Image (cartoon, rainbow, N blue to C red; front, side, top):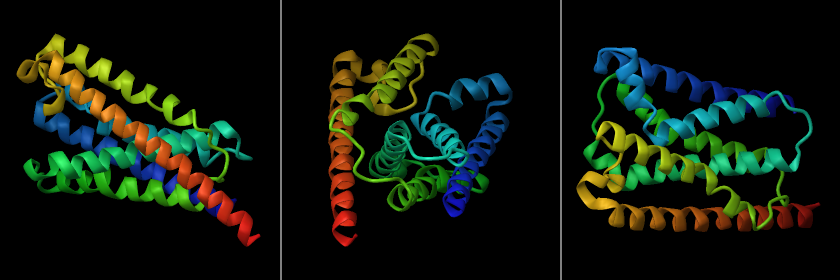
Length: 206
């Protein structure tokens, strides 16, 4: 339990510090706290890394694992892996941060996802996820999508090209969103499958 608490605290603090440093970088770039906040909080990467920080620091202080803890840790792991995967596949080629921004980018999109996956594999109890969990987990990205679209209508800027209504229109953006939703559902179901396989394997060994 001691090492579990330390591990979750380390990943949680790493995510929190990285987000704060990245915000400070944005303040310098945008010339003020408010312009930086408008840009900064438009990204699913930031939402998810904040979620990682909050969940990990909460789990570092908890006692026994309950089903809600398992589901929340699993969902958070899936979201941050999704962030890293989408960034690497669709965005990294056109994104070339330098200096301190390159370090925060490495943490936000690669090291934090790797750390969260390690926590899930090593410490999160297995065999307690139901099939409905994958559907419930869609709520978080759905809320983000609604926020991003409303934000885009208000300020005229969208954080990602694949949800840019100004360029593609709502029809194509909703098609893109449906594709990402399907991907998240598949990832969620994949987590449940792996969870059950690992639980079965641990029972066999025992």
